[in-house]
Image 1 (cartoon, rainbow, N blue to C red):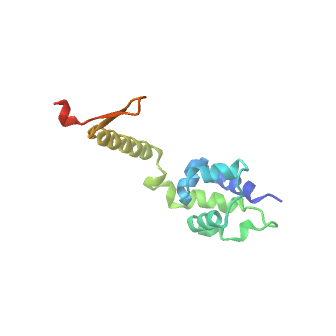
Image 2: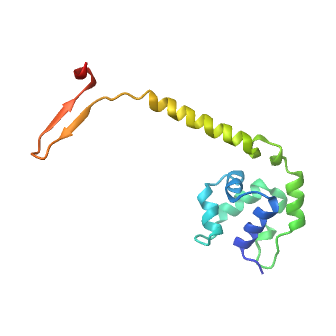
Image 3: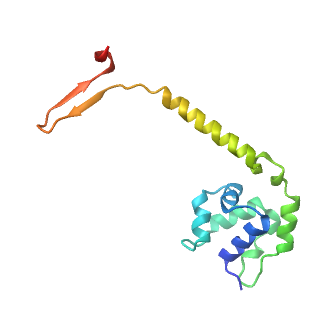
Length: 135
């Protein structure tokens, strides 16, 4: 009988997504799925609930020890689920979103100003410099 980890692996393969995409789809942090697939952690009840919430047609039956993952059902989900046509599953949109995030972070970093600089000396003294003092 396949383990729960093996069933999650089969689900990811059956949906034809990467583990990071799968994590995004079910709403968990990417390392959570990575740790499950690498055997570091076992799938928690929360993970199972998130999978079933995202793919309700799976129901909870597939987690049982005596149940195999219905790959025909997984294929049906892959073909019919709206997530394949949605923006959340389009790789090109993800890249543009990532670049927008990076650009906004770069802009906010460029707006930072030095408030003060403190030098500590080995004789237990210090000196404070403030931008107004530089001008």
